Image (tube, rainbow, N blue to C red):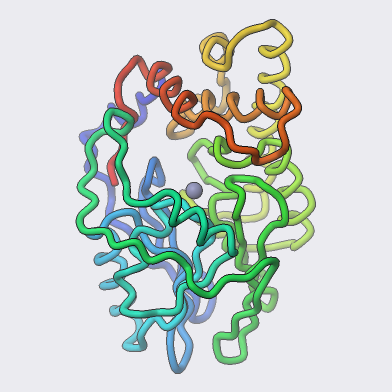
Length: 315
Ligand SMILES: [Zn+2]
């Protein structure tokens, strides 16, 4: 059940697409948005380009750079990281000395995470060469970036959500939001390293009030504002499921096994329910939002939920 969507195909994913979502602003969409296959953003100015995030592997980042070169001969001078996860940061070093900008905690977490080493957790990935390039221009709350006369607001969401260090890029004149991994479209949201309660608040108090007409999620297709409610529905489902399992004295894995994912069963990487329940349990136990918890135990449970098989990764 858990990975039928993937196993049904021979892993030949459609190629990534660089799509202009507003004048001079592109979303680089990498199908199918499952584990380690992220989206990025490209803003083209007259004297340089801005990229929002890099990619997980050397091959994918090189393909992205080639796509950039197909629409501009300007170099990427500024690279914004929406959060520390490797699918958004591994390729930073391939941007030829661009200024890498992020929340200060993104820098800390990129350094702490180091290079990828996940024996037995995901199916093998050809990462290529990775040199850590942590953000080196950091902010505590927000920074405003200008692409010619276009104002781009880079803001930390102010609370743990997908991780402890999530930023969005909001372009008010275009009503366009790059949401990072606060939002997934067609994939299961993943809160293990952030917070369930925080992610709900971030959606309600930060994302919704923006009134974005166009949203580029961290994974999956470009969407309209309805995507926020889609994700909120899942987050509340996780919170409710956790409350029931916690009260019944079940472990997160036991709770996940007893849970009918219903409409969420068809979303990619459904085993994330287990990691999400681990995080929700920590919050029910009174842990601070975003507090460190046993990530290895949670991921080991995700593999167990997946029938003991490594999680499908096609990065
Ligand atoms: Zn992420």
